[in-house]
Image (cartoon, rainbow, N blue to C red; front, side):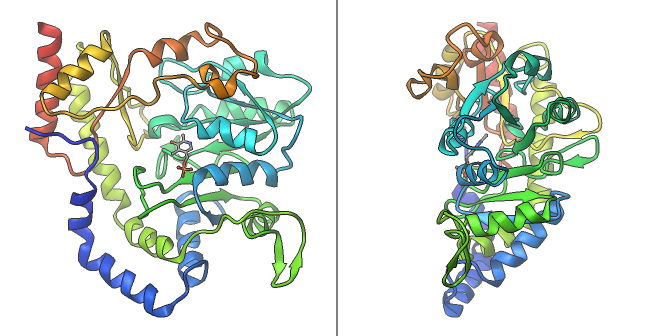
Length: 365
Ligand SMILES: *Cc1c(COP(=O)(O)O)cnc(C)c1O
């Protein structure tokens, strides 16, 4: 039995008639960047996130860079983030001209708020927590720390569209939050796309200029900006897929529950705290002999992935930053143990049963 890590062809087969209609309409209308489709998607997306404003941009890496810049983060400033994220979290801080500073994570892979005070300096300007795997960070503790020290908070919610904690949606906790609609994410475009959400109307207005060269009107430039707009076609595709997001989340949560039940006592599975709605962009187990297990599963037709094998502070690009091998022991330990199992919405219960059976077989041998 083959178990693929992603299934784009399954997704397209399910949506083809609707997407072809959208493609035809947008092409006939001839508005390729911005416009009504983008505005409509932004409205719906802001509502989903419990935020007042959404600003569509070209991708989540730009979203993070623009959000930081829009909040006044720049050269000389330090921004605290997690070392176990996708490279873009720290990369965006560097792109904004600031310095990424790392703190270790908890066993659940999320930023450990008790580590923040150890990373604080006179230059600290913001915190950038990452809702890794689709689980919302301990935002109450992070926001408390930020308020006490006058710091801005930018949520990296790239993996957490639709996630909740204590009844509140990812994106509603920080000064701004950034989402990715990369093809691999839970709400996916047919290419690159992203959004910033915020409850701050003045920041939203600034970001709308910042994503479009700083152009206030056709010929008036308020400040230097970027070219990072959301394509009309992508916005139209996203509006269509937004309708199915609740079902995507439901399926992923069901798949996660099956794994948790079938793998109890065999490998460490992510927990599902009461009152939270984790959206399982990734289902990450923590396992002994991880590399061997991955090879074994591959031999059984099961694709898995590692998010991410090298912590950011150990990347060559980070050599001039604070933080060397051994400084973030939990993140480093996890990097050798984590394995992402297929969890997408098109998996059948039989496929999940097969993955569970193979993992159990591996540890029996
Ligand atoms: C995917 C991802 C990003 C970057 O998103 P893009 O839209 O590809 O730029 C940033 N942070 C995290 C945690 C991600 O998973």
